[in-house]
Image 1 (tube, helix red, strand yellow):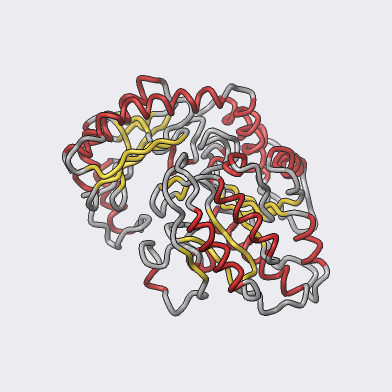
Image 2 (tube, helix red, strand yellow):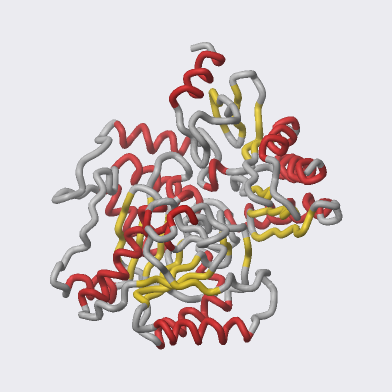
Length: 426
């Protein structure tokens, strides 16, 4: 079909994420993707500095993942998971238990990251309901977070700076503390630790759980914090009978330099959410893992089951690709790849630090961020970076990249040059 006609149909019928209907900015029409490059209908190729919203860590059309998809499609594409099971899901659940922090033994497979957070919150609420502590119905989190766009995840996103302030009064009212002090290597702020202790103690009888993004706050602001605050949360939640949830949808599978961000702190949460890179960006899948204590507590309740069951739960195609993606990651020196990308991002973004509109430049693992002192003009920034041969998706005051782990040094350099160019014209 003619590209102009396709774009006209898109404008008429397709509602794109975080945009009005009809849209105000024409999207770029992608016809193919291979390696780390997107081919557009007009013939241009762009290096994908976003890993397709942080998921495509192996790039596109990887032969190993393509083969896993084809092989599983030749067996079965889908069967319901209620009353049935299958090898790909069993293998995946076992693999996740083996790889994640010790003590997480049970795996609930679901459709998307937001749904995994829904499941995690439901686990926390139902755990305390089952134990007869019905007053424990709220979650605590720190500001600057983002956990998804469905209702309970929206309620634990930043209530002011996030995208969901429209729903104030409709969403459950959660407990918020200030965002953690910035800087992965910054010293621990004892006054902040004391604040966490006071608030958790004050609300302990109301709190079912604490939920945070460990080490990196993603779409809420691309902020990094000292892992020690995670150890503090683990100690405080254990002391006050509150469950701890880590949302590693964005950070899981190597993005921060360790396989899971929780490893920076050496602690195990009661519930862990995974998604995005779980399938290498091929199909949507997520998981909520929990400890035996959480599962046993739920099973002892008046309703002894977790009342959640997505139609495509543990889809065989997706499970098979997730297994292949994890095996592919572990078969390589992925840590060296992430360190190499980190080095390239640091070197390439250093020149942006002195630009007039730049408030901060920060890098951790395969994450590079330029923070401006004002909102990004998305249309202008997109034009600049695409003219540099790169695809990025700035938001708020941030120009950032999360490149696929297979990017070459030259491709990382192209990404940092595009980011710097966008900051220079901001």
